[in-house]
Amino acid sequence: MARTPVNQTSGHHADQAPSRGGGATGLPIVIATTGSARIYAEKQGFDLTSYTERLSPDCQTGDIVSVFSGGVRHDFAVLRRRWVIGEPNSSLEITLDYPVRGR
Image (tube, rainbow, N blue to C red):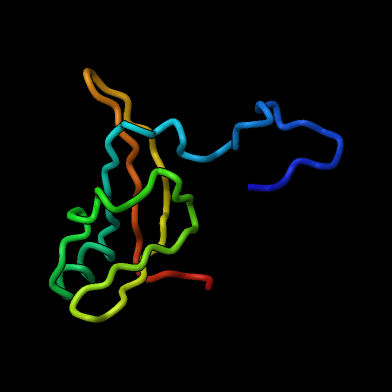
């Protein structure tokens, strides 16, 4: 996220970050995958959705998530974050993509 120009405010309180997932504390996180990420993980013999409890709500779009499986590091990109609001529960859905592009 771009920084606010000097001497201008972003509209957020000084102790709040505009796009962090801090509000997700205590809410479940759901990992979604793109087709390419799901196929890659299946070929490597692991299920990305099983890593849900290890992923922090602080991760942001563009972050790289490395999964270690079988002694090998597998890199995925956080493609998007989406709040899913429902009754009775809400969750933060984090979509992982493969391959990591632009790095």
